Amino acid sequence: MSAATGDTADTPDLLARMSTSAVDTATLEALRLTVDRLCADYPSVAAHQLLTESRAWLDRMADLLNHRLTLSQHREVLSMAGMLALLVGCLEQDTGASNRAEATRRSALSLGLESDDHDVIGWSYEMSAWFSLTRGDYRGVLTAADTGIAKAGDRSVSVQLFAQQAKAWARIGDRRRVEVALDQGRCLLERLPYPEDVQHHFVVDPHKWDFYAMDTYRLAGENEHAESLADEVLSMATDWTGRVISPMRAAEAHVTKGVVSARQGDLDSAISHGQTALEGTRQSVPSLVMVGKELGTELMQHYPNETEAKEYVDELRSLATTAA
Image 1 (cartoon, rainbow, N blue to C red):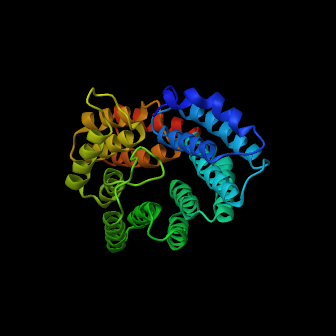
Image 2: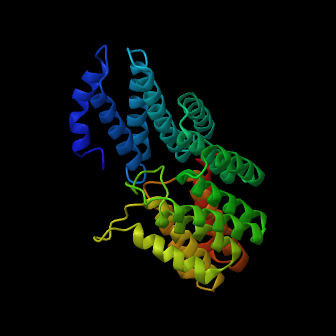
């Protein structure tokens, strides 16, 4: 649900409740719904807008901890603050503030440990794996993923941690371990109940798994499989009116189709998909640059003298400066 919908209509009332000397169950439930709504807004709301709103709510939670709370209420607020800190860290990373994102991730981990929330703990390690992946630190990805899986156990976040392992092994070039990680993640996903809210950023559903698998098959050179998954991702990232509702997933799917086109000798299609990926208004810049480089490498390998290929690489380099 977006920020413009009914969830925020009760914000003044919720703020008033949070200002009282004692906090009731209804107030905490309303606060939990607000956190969930913010997490569901992640793929569609402008990053800076969502970051501003999320930081404001995080500050309010910090103030709430100074009120008279029961032990269980204190723990619940810490848990919600941890989840919101994870969201803030993701948004900071998306906008290129990598150092700040890492500091926020560490704060989220501390909140998770203090509240004994294994979801928050697991996702803090997943973020570490993601950050390492965009830096090209593949051993760092594997270390963070192993730790996160051990801490989180059989939870949704572990599915994504197995996916991060697969991405790292694909870039290292170990195909056998790619398949092992994918199998482990897929088996765990099948054992877990289907999530109540697939829009929530910190849950993994079967369609999100297709998005992860697409990355590994693209890197492995399995063009037909990668393109098939890219088509599936694009289908799920677009609503019935043709509006893109998951722009970041759609961007990587377009890069995947661009890579396959470049390998198959279709320069026009490769450039078209590459440009579409770069034109999205909601981007995770470090991740987009990471996968965009793969298309740039294919273009320079197959079409080193073509103007369109050089222009795409130049545009990608320009984007990369914002993530530096």
